[in-house]
Amino acid sequence: MKTAIFAAIAAATVSVPAFAQDAAPFTGPRAGVTMGYDKVHGGDGFSYGVSTGYDLAVTPRVTFGPEVSFSDSTAKFGGVDASRDLAASVRLGYVVTPQVLAFGKVGYANSRFEIPGDHQTLEGVRYGGGLEYSVTPRTYISAEYQRTEYENNFGGRDAGVVGVGFRF
Image 1 (cartoon, rainbow, N blue to C red):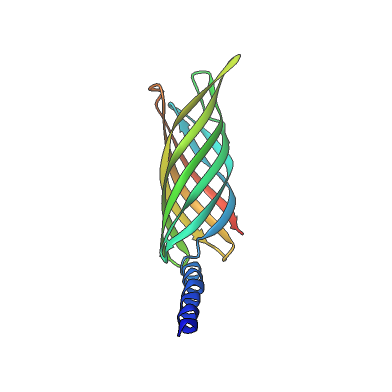
Image 2: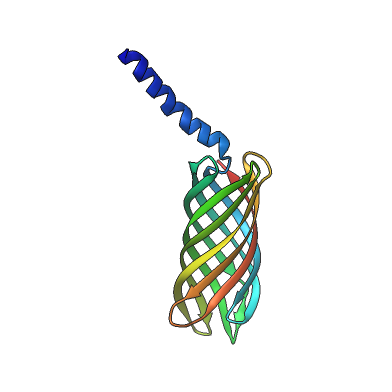
């Protein structure tokens, strides 16, 4: 009897994660490139960068995980150039269809601004959301909106980016 109970527990333990992985295709490590529109303090430009993350299946249709990104921008305002941007976020997603994931994210951003002869680094809160489309089980395209609210009443930053990535 004990053997049957242990066998049932072992079977349930192995099959539940496998079921969650099959039902939630947007899980595991991922990395990609992004590009798009960037607007900072009234000046706009082109944003480009890379991102990586790891998504876990919380339920068969819900994913959750960390994400980090590094980007740069051509945006300029009042003689100031928006420069490198680092961000660390958590992302919560919902599998709308087997190929579409809708997600929201919130996290920390650290951005550098080049002033002639100097630079300033500002921190802020980044939030946003978007859609990810699974082209194949290992490749995806995405579109998202990001908003950053900086410290010291500096104002905000808006970006609309598209991306291409791979899951491992």
